[in-house]
Amino acid sequence: MNKLSIIIPCYNEENTLERCVEKVLEIQDRNLCLEIIIVDDASTDNSLFLANRLAEKNVNIRVKYHSENQGKGAALRTGFKQATGDFVAVQDADLEYNPFDLKKLVQPLISNEADVVLGSRFLSGEMHRVLYFWHFMGNRFLTFLSNMFTDLNLTDMETCYKVFKREIIQSIEIEENRFGFEPEIVAKIAYMRLRIFEAGISYHGRTYEEGKKIGVRDGFRALYCIFKYNASHAPLPVQFLIYLFVGGFAAVFNLLVFLLLYKVNISSMIAAPVAFISAGMLNYLLCIKLLFRHQVKWKSSIEIALFFLLVLCVCFFDCLITISMLSISFQPSTAKLTATALVLILNFCGRKYFIFPEPSSGSWKAQSNDK
Image (cartoon, rainbow, N blue to C red):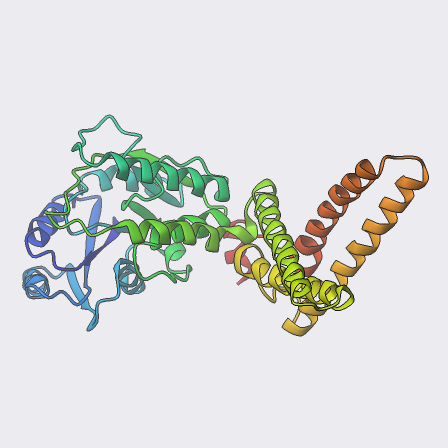
């Protein structure tokens, strides 16, 4: 018999928690036994009391709690560590999702066709409650952006319903405490090159008056998480676009610093190198903050030294290419633009493959065999 661990993060859900657990228990049958782990995230209502009462009535229900409110991601992190089933699923306590859909989602895992299965609210012909247009557009946009960075073709990255093989979810370090969990976990399962399936589910959303908690701040956090957890191993065209942004921002900063120093009567012989070095430091900081992983191959001091050595090499090649093209009668604008394009590519490749080389992700099975 297969065992499914269902993690229910709970914060102030006294109105729906009991009905949610009852519905979850109904999906148990002779081929699927359940383990329900309710994680109360410091509720201020009767949620914890109700959860403990449910656990007293059913040995398959366990309760964990946080003394301070930390968020959905933190509650899931606690629950995942406690899971003992063959598979692990997430179920919100607010009953926006129908637990019977979990029986459909777990099937590809049972048959070993998939490692992770996601439920999609937008892939289904099932009944949906009609609610907020801008929430819908926000979800679509975040899913689109996530797909660009992960090279997946999901239709609903922000879905609550994600079902995993237990050993997979327990091997992943969850860093996000709130709703940033969703883009974080999608980024990490994409990097592990898992077999990811998606299936349509029903959805009965609720309004803010009914207790909906996700807000605009969580949307901005999701954007940040998509960049944070994907940028260092995103598809090459996406990385190059981010690099162009970083380089462009640093170039503008270089110009502004030079003009500011020149305006306060500092000689150009001093202003130019100070502006260049300042822009170089900003470029480096943006690279390790937005694009590449810090200290992947080199220690910090060596990494910085190699970074600036690469910058000097690129400057040399820029001058060499420009002068060489001018010597064979190219127009100055053509020579400079060509040199700029070539050294831009050289600079990016040097950073990606030498200064900040990203280790090969490999498949999850290969990673497991290496341990």
